[in-house]
Length: 113
Image 1 (cartoon, helix red, strand yellow):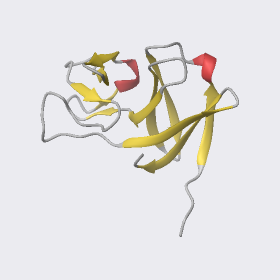
Image 2 (cartoon, helix red, strand yellow; image 1 turned 90 degrees about the vertical axis):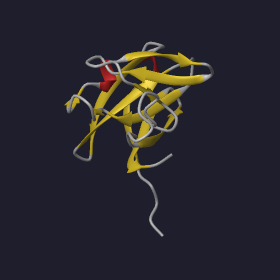
Image 3 (spheres, helix red, strand yellow; image 1 turned 30 degrees about the horizontal axis):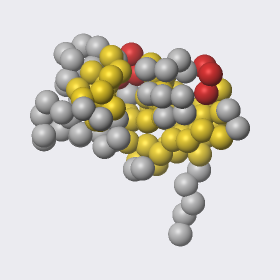
Image 4 (cartoon, one colour; image 1 turned 120 degrees about the horizontal axis):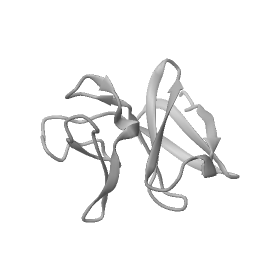
């Protein structure tokens, strides 16, 4: 059984609420979003529609109670919890486990919550 390794990314205070940052972890770009005082979400930074690594610069908000990010290029919206595209049910982006510990943000490079 393998254990999931978490990587320290930055201080929680380095991510203003309702914004995202990008981190290169084990060769992949991961977008990390802060949607509340300690509410964090991590998804692939790769936008499957534009084929660009831009989701960390997307527009953060909610659809109902669902935290989401809209791509800054074509504006498709993705659920930050599941990675599901809210505009196209056939598309989903990878999600990653993320946590705050002692004021620092940690993310796992293995896909899945």
